[in-house]
Image (tube, rainbow, N blue to C red; front, side):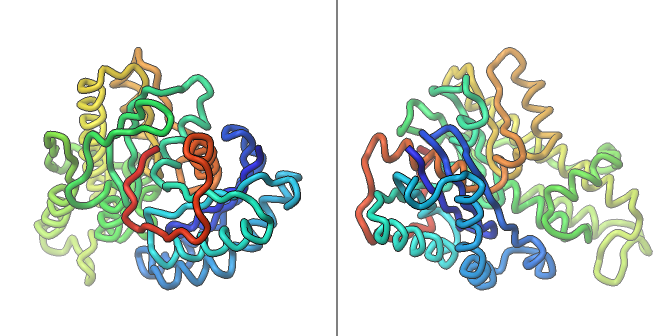
Length: 338
């Protein structure tokens, strides 16, 4: 079965063709980073308009790369939530129109389930049950995938998601957008011991607002002459040290939370998925903490938003529940992990 998958939940316009849920025949992503960088974050209206312009060419590119024409498709899968409402509407409207025109079954999949199934795509030995840390710009959760189609959320953030905190700290340090990659680069050159930041640990929850505020106070309390007119540290040594201290504290909280999930469930397999999973310090910390368990951290192309993961989630949903009705609505707050 060949599924055309479409992803437009935030600021990546993506399409993929996935065969039998696991073989990625093509995966094309059009990034909007340059569009949103001047604003320091995603502007929903701009993102939706960019999806309108990019989606048809991206789908054509995915079909061409896969060597599969419209006649070679068996179903259409699309992200229906969670995400930005306007962005989701662009993708689902296009997908439903295509499915109706081609008389193909359609599946509205969860973006979060897609992230969970990105690990299943990346590792053919990984099967449920397993525990996953789902960590991105909009979400920070631990879940247990008990079996295909059944997941249980174990913990979630009470405030900022980890990726959001990376973006905000990068902005405080004048490092640009997106924050994750630039924080990671600066942290490699910094000494985290120069600043003491809190190591938050909550039962069945994450929280990054206190850590973010601690960075703000650390910047505020720098000696006179250390800040520019915008309140940004002038010296690279200071910026790098703050980036390193923040990253170390954030990674510690994430790995502690994943450890709590493993202890609660007795899981022998763990996965780290979502955009923040691309952070090398996090991947290394997970590999070290869970040595002896089956650990999966997908490659970068599957960590960041993409449509291949949506295709995998849609295939499982179609297999277990059948196609969705025509004209289904988007759900910006959807919290499904399978």
